[in-house]
Image (tube, rainbow, N blue to C red; front, side, top):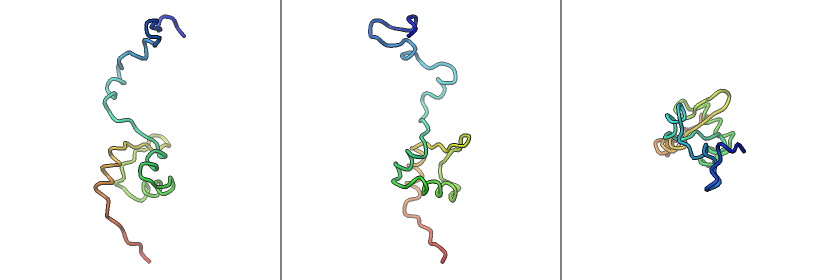
Length: 92
């Protein structure tokens, strides 16, 4: 460990206790994105079902970042509150 960044009083790194600067400071108050597996567990559905939901619904709160889907749990929860009880009938 670099001795310049080490606080001997409590054994922590000075960098770990520093306030965020620059772009990190702008995003420090925002909710973090979570991955597909976390949302599937949150909704109690399989990852495959969640994929189908994302593709079939244009209003599901999913954000594609590169090749990966990311979500904010508060947006997913809000979507669930507004869409609970609405079912579509399958065409036979």
